[in-house]
Length: 223
Ligand SMILES: N[C@@H](CCC(=O)N[C@@H](CS)C(=O)NCC(=O)O)C(=O)O
Image 1: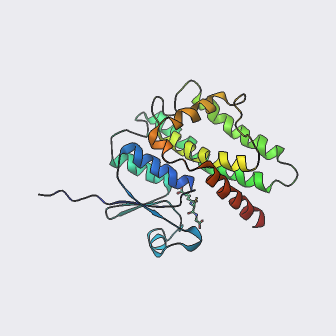
Image 2: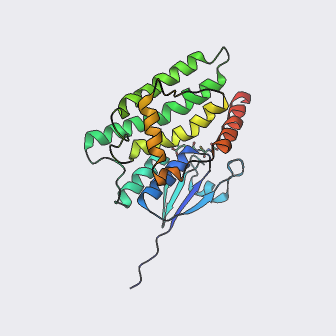
Image 3: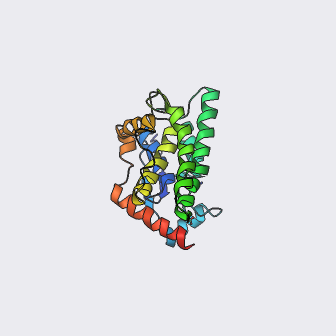
């Protein structure tokens, strides 16, 4: 009997951290996939059909199944393709990774970018608030190669994809948000991440990401 070929498709947008993290996970697992780029101002009928609730990317299609929401997709990938585990087995470590990943998603883009862009009377307060958030991650990664320990794990993928989107955004604003002197452990972590091929392959060219984040900032200001 011939084995039925698996269908794995990812609908995404190149500059989206939520998309790049799914790509990272698929690459870490060695799962071949077809990538379908979305033009977000002109969403395809396929995206609207597959994600009618949020109409957002990423969307993962696995055979006849549709999986939505990037962190949910990461968990699905981890449970479906067991090699190179992403989430820790230990219940407490798993709970911590999921909690901090949720914290990153809920706070970093809003406090660390949208509030910063909107700050009218100087950016100092928003920068201070952002660095307070970043300090939680600095403490968490202290003494470890990755949040996941010796290997890239769930929180590395979530926080890493966010970092590779926000750092160019800050660069575009002339801000060094994660200076080496203040955040030595996170700077070491970023360097470690870049040594991992599956991660490196998902980092977009800095100039393109800066250009995109500048446009995003303009959109926020004019909203
Ligand atoms: N919570 C979602 C966020 C996804 C998201 O915000 N995607 C953006 C691109 S970065 C999007 O598709 N935006 C289209 C829109 O808002 O119309 C996830 O984790 O997947």
